[in-house]
Figure 1 (spheres, rainbow over the protein chains, first blue to last red):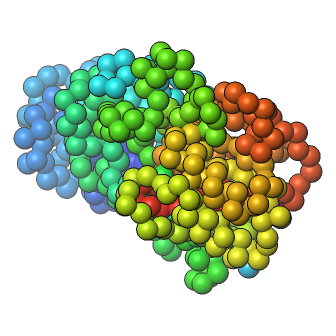
Figure 2 (figure 1 turned 135 degrees about the horizontal axis):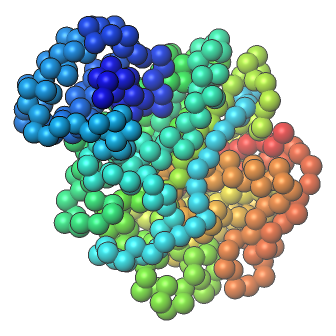
Length: 94
Length: 369
């Protein structure tokens, strides 16, 4: 599963109504440049935590600067492998 | 200053389902999909309900339009009721918010305001079931006193949720399965049938001044809110004082008389208290010369959303040339309509009424265009 593609797919879920142009162009993008606000990013962390099976208590330690930081955090603390496809991942949170 | 209702979207359903696995089993009008996966605490039922009226094309269009724009979320309460679900019930409606901040209506309002390009003012309202009509007074103020060009109103409440169903069932304010088994049907202003079921519903309405209005659907002539002195904080006085004060204020603000009102959309819960209060009020205001209907028996009581949502539904019906009768009336009545009324033409004035716990009463007068 392509991480950048997953991140951008989740933008449509974490933002209310629509993404209003929010997007990451690369995993190295600063989260501040994606157009997501603080609550969007909080939700993004929770959704990714669900997809990777990261316990809620550990999610509180998440302090990412870039998109890649989020995925590195998830990979390091995952309790399960994420699904193979974006669609399967979205079905876990929708 | 003319204020126009230029666009709206509504979500409600006449379909019902019996909820058996709650302390006071009762029928509800709801969209089951809003609770899909809600138990994860990541998908919030009220937000998903709102999405049914948050038309992305309309919001995109609003963002592109010039003008001073405000946003009001008439949510009925300061947080959505699904939160703090300490009812001890485990069923399809059970969920807790993982982020309490997202259950706060003002945080949600701020996020939605941006989506609609409303960068000049954000208001939330917690006037219980009077909420969406009460904010019509705010809408009028924003245009007339603060020079707004456009005000977007979103209204919804987390009505079908375990805490709400428990509270209303316990207080016998809504119809329960026990009453249904006795043959009682939802109705209002009737001697035999009475009451309502709880329902999910939402409305998105766009108000604009003459400079920015394009295809106007109605004109907001006036709005007024009032209270009353009462010993019962959750009921209504039998003399209808609160309704009278709200309606009289709206008529005065519109500079019209009661004889200019063609249709009254009542609060119309059909409870004993509301039947007595609203009937007494209308008889005082109109001297028995009026035509009234109620929507709560069709779509359920959508709480804070009900006033504006039902007004939009009435505008839709009147566009088709009818004012629907009140369901399940057991007597023929041309005042509190027991049958649909055929009505033609435009330019009819509608008086919409709403009441909320805490002795809050709201009235708004719209003119069909």
